[in-house]
Image (cartoon, rainbow, N blue to C red; front, side, top):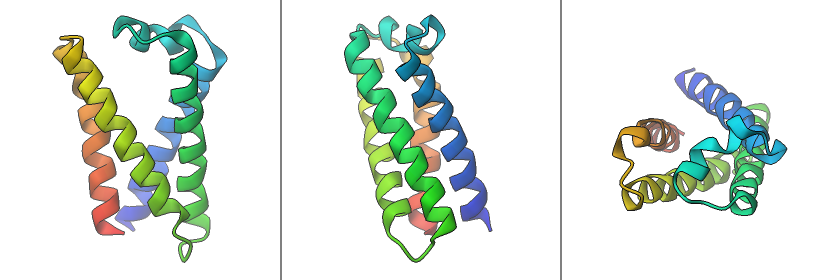
Length: 112
C-alpha cells in the first residue's frame, strides 16, 4: 500500500516537473538556469523525468513488470545528479527538494 502511495506521488511530481521543463516556461526552467544548466539540457532532463514518471505509472498498473523499478532507478540517478549540480553551483539551500525526492525514490526502490 505504501509503495502505491509513494510511487503515485513521485509519478505526479516528476510528470509535472518534466512537462514544465519540456514546455520551456520560465517557471519550469528557472531552477536549472540557477544552476547554470543550459535550456536544451534542462529540456532533456524534463523528457527523462516525464518518461520515468510514466514508467512509475506503468509499474502501478502492471506490478509484475520491472519497468516501475527501472523508472525509479532512473529517477534516483537523476536526483543524484541534481544534488551534485546543486553542490557544484554552491546552491545548497535549493537542494532540499532534490534530497527529498532522492530519499523517497530510495525508499520506493527498497520497499518494492
